[in-house]
Image (cartoon, rainbow, N blue to C red; front, side, top):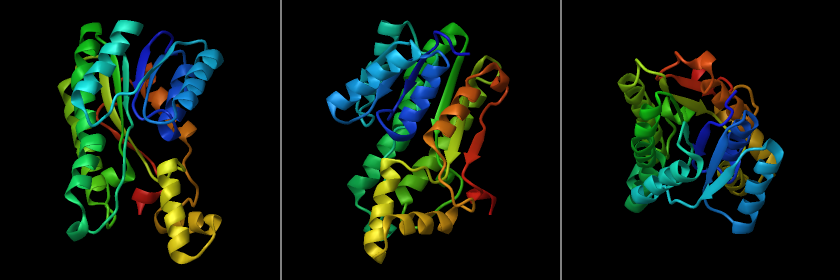
Length: 260
């Protein structure tokens, strides 16, 4: 479906981003991986994608808090792979604290990576899509882009911002073959969420399985985690011709979280 398209997926060395990268590669797209982690492990992931799917896979260590490095990542895709057709903005970090105790530097870092990086990536990639007359931008927002939770001021603000930015970019490109949409997952079992599960287990003196159920029960009526692979399949759909007239949407994959 996406043979020889070029896709950049930020925050894709593990978790949701890696699940999306693999699904895009399976659909025929060449991919640019991005994120932090052990160099040897990242190289193993990169070469496995090439071997499994017969596509090219590059790696960029661009820091999503640095606009110049984001632009360099886009330039890398253009130089080495011939362009950028698909941009998946997935990189994200989290910090929890009441507003009155929220460290200013943590606010700045969450906003920089979860929101500003999305803007800088789109700004750098969009001209290449416009020159080709085709493009797909998929922003991984969150259920927290639509509703709020206590102690997550920066994350909720950033994800609400991503949903709004998605609509603006979609409207500015509404008449062409470039789409911009947001996916809003609920709980997905990733390293980021595992830290919250571990913290809950330690705080309440329960085991990991009990903590998972408790965490899900608070918000997600299905009591099941969404998988990175499911989000990858939805991303592939949004990149397909079938989704050509889906523009500015925020698609929930949250087990009923925001239906309440």
